[in-house]
Amino acid sequence: MIVQNRGLKLTEFEFKVGAVKELKAQLEVLSKKVDVAIKNVDQNGIDGNYSINSDILSVAQRVHSLSALLGYVKNFKLELSLPKEEGKGNKSNDKEG
Image (cartoon, rainbow, N blue to C red):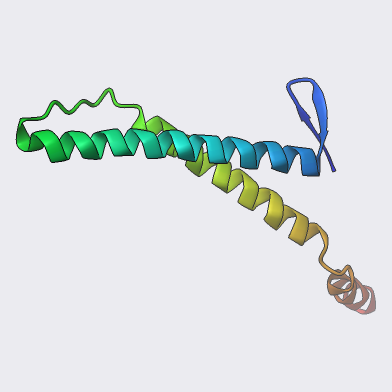
C-alpha cells in the first residue's frame, strides 16, 4: 500500500513508523504538560491559576487521533486480508435462485 502525504509517497511501513514516532513525541509533550499541571495543583491548591488556555486538550486530541489512525490502518489491513471464499457462497446461491 502506498500512502501519499503532502506530495510524498510513503509505503505503509514508512507511514506507520512516522505515525508511531509522532505519537510518541505527542505523548511525551502531554506527559510534560500534565506534570506541570500536577505540580501547580500540588503547590498552589485552590489558590493556583488554572487556565482554559492550557493546550493539554489539543495535545490529548492529537494523541487520540494518531492512535485511532494507527488502529484504522491495522483494521483496514486485516479487512483486506479476509479470505475471498466468504463472499463466494452468496454469489453461487444468487445464481441458483
